[in-house]
Amino acid sequence: MLAKVSNSIYSCIRGASGSLSSHCVFNQLRNISKMANLKEVVSTLEKMAPLSLAESWDNVGLLIEPDVKKSIECVFLTNDLTEDVLEEAQNAKANLIISYHPPLFKPFKRIILKNWKDRITSRCLSQGIAVYSPHTSWDAVKEGLTDWLISCFDGSVTVLQPHSENPEFSHIVTVVSDTCEDSPLIVVNAFMELYPQFKLNNDLKILSTGHTQLKLLCNSNILSLFNEMTKYHYMSAFVQKNEMIPETDVGTGRLCHFREGLTIRNVIQRVKCHLKVNNLMVALARGSTLESTINSAATVAGSGASVLNGVNADLYLTGEMSHHEILDAVHNNVTVILANHSNTERGYLKVFADNLSQKIPQLRVCISNVDRDPLLFV
Image (cartoon, rainbow, N blue to C red; front, side):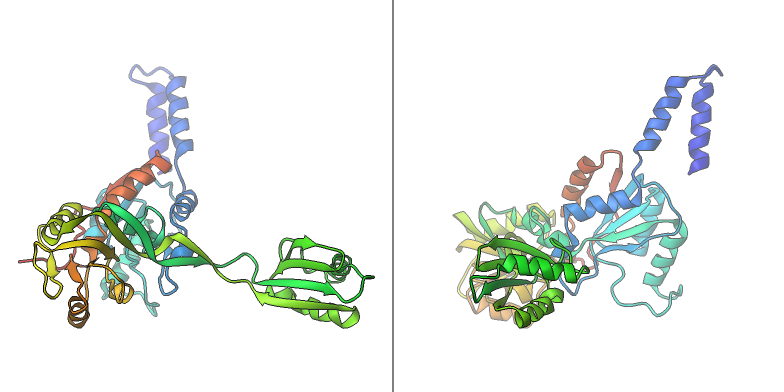
């Protein structure tokens, strides 16, 4: 990389006539200084879809970090990182692959070339290609993959399972003085001086104060301080758990109530157009026909039965469901549309590519042409 840059600068210095060109040198150096490094790109990716939004079982974030340090010039997007996709990414001179599905999920005990995922890992490391996976963080984030999936319908959209964010502090404590002599605030400050390992605004945050009452937020590691404090002072401490905060615009799955009713036939055409597929699998609700009108749809990308089960909607749109899950749905008056797992996800790559290019304009962002759902309709 450095040799290529040096040769480029040298050629530019001499120019076509062999004379020095300081303007060209300045432009070359300016372009080099604008190149993004892996840390900067990963930081941007995490801001666009915080990893805290991912499901607890998921494996997201930077999965492969080569020891070879390179500037990130080309980012390659794919739904699944297969060997064919990796070869395509290498031909595109990619420095970073963003694979929606994590190629590394189960722990490795060895990396040998007999297994295809091992070969991918080995080749990425040897070629200096980093791999990042967003997976369910993309599903949950506002204006992310699931919002894109439901956007083929016009209506009011809500989150099926809102994400709940852990509060900054785990407990709420109310300290009450049993007399009018001791101020709780003064006593707490005195104990903080005795225990310098506890820091204000780090382990403890004061919400409100009064002459006989103090309300504060704290973490569990400091609760013992209040036990000690109430032993030696005429005070009482009332502790309660600080509940998780629901975020109503992010989370798993989406439900759309249509502005106007649509026939199932019309819905099928909308979904085909949106996903850019020629075929879908459809299970009609009991007693329904293609001309039946529906007024709502619930969707989860990929495999959505566990989330969609029991949701009050006229239609379930997802990638795959089991035979018995489909039977349960149609007997509960729900029509099911299945597009194959990754067909409900892949179309979002173009949307994300445009967003990433706006965030880091100096990147060359490519989307795989060989990535496709392994199942075909024949």
